[in-house]
Image (cartoon, rainbow, N blue to C red; front, side, top):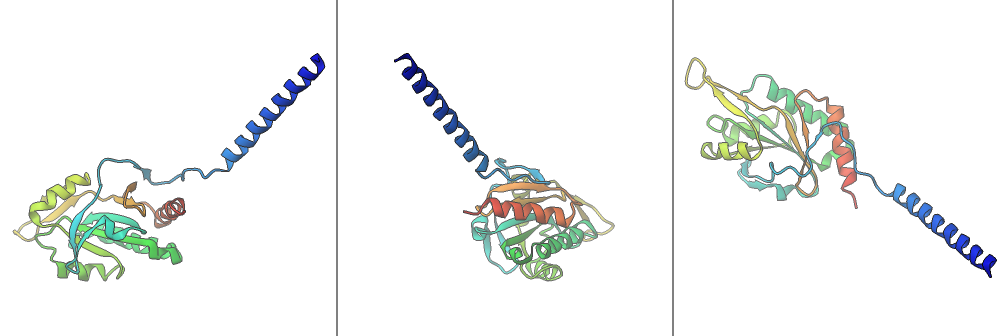
Amino acid sequence: MANALTFNRRQTLAMSVSWLAAGGVLAGCSPQAPTFKSTDITGAAFAQDLKLTDHTGQVRTMADFRGKAVVVFFGFTQCPDVCPTSMTTLAEVKRLMGDQGKQLQVLFITVDPERDTLTLLKEYMTNFDPSFLALRPEPAELKAVADSFKIYYRKAEGTTPTSYTMDHSAGKYVFDTNGAVRLFSSYGTEPAVIAEDILSLLKSMEG
């Protein structure tokens, strides 16, 4: 009887170890959270949404772009270097994404609504990619929009009332296909790095 009990205990222990091992294998096969080269800000309490008029005159919110990765950049059309460089970078990001570039939506939000009319913004977007959209807050709502994205901007006076420039944050926010902010990409990040991060983000959202 003792031998039978010993055998049963050993058998049960062996089975338990086998189940634990199998569980470990299964756990090891489960999808892992993606790793990014950009700053992961998943769960951030800012950059939650927007409601702005695009350069075609249509009011947009993040819900309009569900199913796509969205990159939001703040700038202005008379920016001499940072803005055109950033937008050229994003055009290259879309190209590097290949067929999946169709799942990318770039949004350019002006910090200079006094000069950036919808017509001017539309012309500006055509310099980079016809799918890119420019959004224009009214001057009175610009501060609230910038604050909601934790964006810095300041008017730097020029020699005439209309020759001023705008100092502003130059990073990019990346949203997932559900409209949640996920990544922050600093100015100067290489297009290949941003493209790789967005492709990883899109893959993680599949299924």
